[in-house]
Length: 203
Image 1: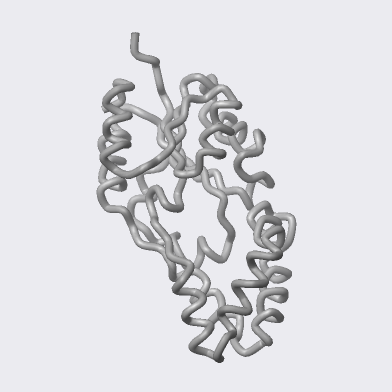
Image 2: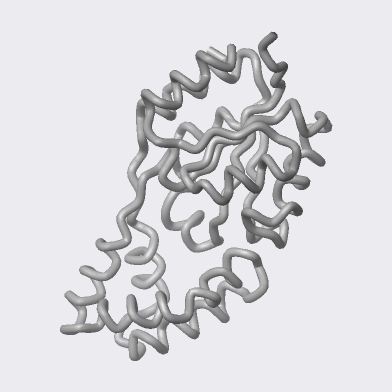
């Protein structure tokens, strides 16, 4: 018997909106030779700074002060926010599933993200209107795969864990959803997702 779902939860980055951080490095290198590479080196070796920002543990201004310092204050906050955030494109095929799913299911977006990427990067995308709720790491004080972020979605839907199914490109985050009692599909492209939805009786 097909499992009964009432809520479909989507990740954002690399599911609905592929991103390319190489663009950021290129833009900073264009400001000053090697500046983008320096930024990348710092970012990778101090990834906890990014994670703290995503989790809301440090403020936007604190994050900006650190990043602009790494960039030797050669750019201002506005340019940083734009260069750092203009990395997304929309997967129109995946986004095109949302109106159909919306007819039968509650749709929730659940993302590890930050206030800068939201404001300067993805907040204007039309597909967001199909979601009943956005659960964003920096707003709920938790990031995937921490149980708290999945529970924040349940607090909104009011549905039991087993009625939720989560779509995420990162295996660890999909497993985090399973640990919370949800079903999950690791996203590996549009065709594979449609096949998974068909097998599960969703489409």
